[in-house]
Image (tube, rainbow, N blue to C red; front, side):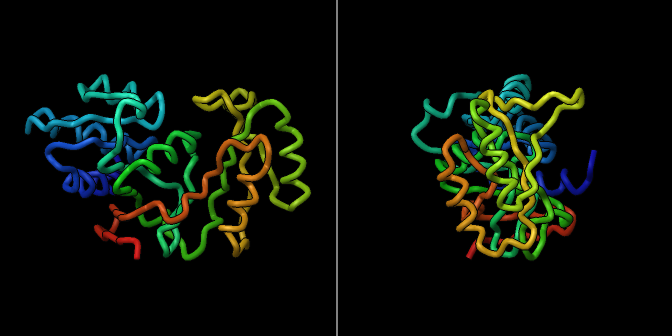
Length: 223
C-alpha cells in the first residue's frame, strides 16, 4: 500500500467527527480512507452515515460495514473526503480521472466541508498537467468532440482497455481535453457548461476547503 496515500487518509480520518454524515470520494486514495474509516468506526462505535460518489465506492463502503445512503436521503453532508488528479496553489483542482466527476461534484456541492487527500505530485502552480475530463451524453457527442477540436483542446474519448468507449455510472461518455496554457479557467468552465450535451466538467473551482498532502504531511486551507 502506498505510504503517502495512507498518511493522507490518516490525516483526513482525524478530521471526522464521532457522529457525522460523510461523503466518500472515489479513487485509490479515497479507497484507503474508506478502509481506515470503516475500521475506526467499528472500533470506536462512531455514528456515521455515508454518501458515496460512485457505485464502486458504494459497494466498497457497504462491504466494510459502513451505513451507506443515497444523497437524496440526507439534507446535507458534514464533510466529504476525496482525492484529486491535480490541485493548484488556490486549491482549485481537476477531478474525474476515475470517471466519477458528476457524482463527486454533486456530493461536494452539498457538503459543509470538502477535504482532498493527495500526494505532492498532484500539486502544481497552474492546472493543466492532467487532462480535463468532460462528461457528455452519448447522443450527439461527436459534435461536441468536433467543437472542442476546433478550439484547439485536443479532445480524446476516454477508452477502456478493449478499445471501447468508457461509460460512466450515468451512462455517459468522457472526453478528455488538453487545457495547458489556458489562463481563464473560470471562463473555460462557463463555456463548457453552456455546451448543449455537456453534463459536467472536471474543473472543481473554489470547492476544496482543505488539502492534505500525505507525502509531506502538510495541510492547506482555502483562503
